[in-house]
Image (cartoon, rainbow, N blue to C red; front, top):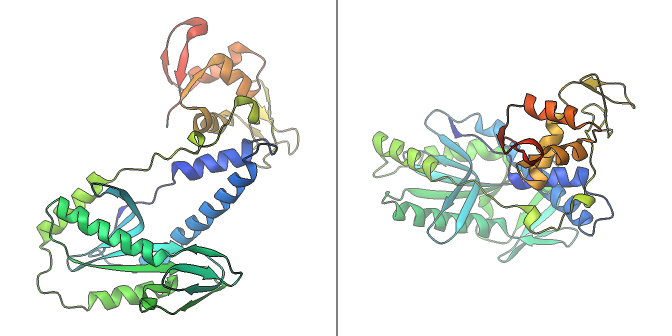
Length: 311
């Protein structure tokens, strides 16, 4: 049973906007594309957990992207499964090629090295034990798995922990095996519910902001409203509707996605003049009507009025 749904991270949403709107002459444009590719691959690995975890029962409490503070550091798992008898931490990957796990790192057959996810998930296990102790909860047996869902993946290992790394479709069997384990003192139903509530309450979404590490000026950003059908920009506005000169599609609400992009790039505060420039409108009155139609929080009067874009 899913207790906490998966979240689309702020960092991924920012990378998608930066990849779409940053001018390709920006010194960090290539880095942005590489980071986005990496995050999208990670997202594929996480989404691939949906099907195998659909075989779980109501006794398996599932938390996606749970991010906790252990008193010193934050840690986040792609998935955490809580039962009365055990906890399972899952780190999901989507990587092609022959993957060789040794004691220090993960090496792909193209001789590219990566941080070893076995070490990562084991570190998260230690941090979760610390969190449980910090909040005066009994510490059940905690198990770790690294899953890989890429169809062109071959897993090799010389470590004693090789059974930690599995293909994603083998996950139901692993969970069934855990269910058969005998535990002397499983959590009571009341204590399980108390722990579940505490985990949800302790979750702190990441506030990592790429724009704090990448210098983006307004002149670096492509402005205009994008077409949702063909991605052409800028759309043209006539009589209250946005028109695409390329595919001839029309959309009365296309400015909403553009303003979401603005918020991710520059923050929630916007003025009529800034909105007019970003949406590529000629008329302040048209811009005002658009902003006021969104029922946004406002402060100030006339030219000093500021609007606050919603999350």
